[in-house]
Structures are given as structure tokens and as C-alpha cells.
Image (cartoon, rainbow, N blue to C red):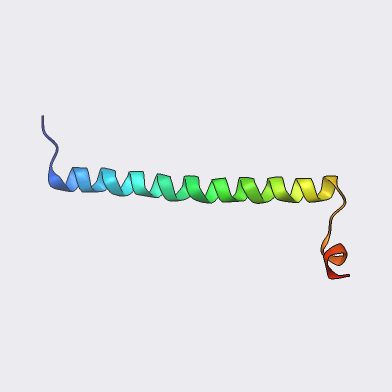
Length: 50
């Protein structure tokens, strides 16, 4: 059975939302990794200032 245009459009929108969420999660994971590395090497904003 072929899907209707509206069904396909809804599926595309759902997939798009999943992609947006995955991208957000990837950015959060990268930021957390950077923060962990900074903590590991005792980097902080005060070191960068002076």
C-alpha cells in the first residue's frame, strides 16, 4: 500500500526532528569532552586571562 503525501510529509518531519536532536546531543557531548579535558589539565578561564 502506498503512503499518502501527508503521511510521507509527517515522516520527513519526524526524521528531521530526530536529526536536529542528534546534532544538539553531539554538540553537548563535544562540549562535555572539552570541559573534561580542561579539568584534567587544570585549565580554567583565569589561566587564559593572565
